[in-house]
Image (cartoon, rainbow, N blue to C red; front, side):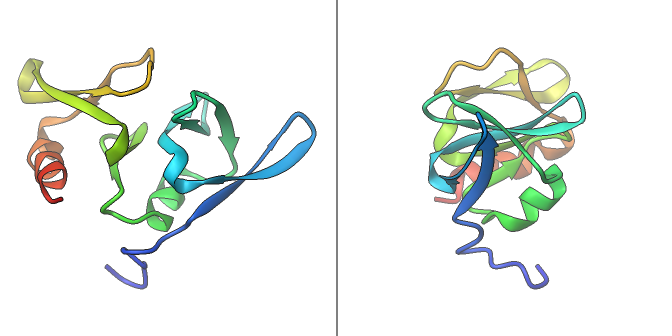
Length: 121
């Protein structure tokens, strides 16, 4: 695991919007995703913010118990997962508790690890 603090991790992110800086608590974040080569944060209140970090960097700053990298584009919070269903080619499709237009698909290579992560509570 290296030097990563897996139980604590980053507790907030600084965001800039409408000419103001403010912090967003990690507990209020549903997921991170990539849009047009930029990292985006989506909160449970459906607010969306740009983040100045790569998903790899964000993943390393967050506790593994709280967030899972479902694929190259998405990093999802445990609290945001509503349900998981089987999808084509042994993939999994993640349904979120908040509306989100894109499909969150877990590749078959990560499906077992994702289900273990969900069960490890």
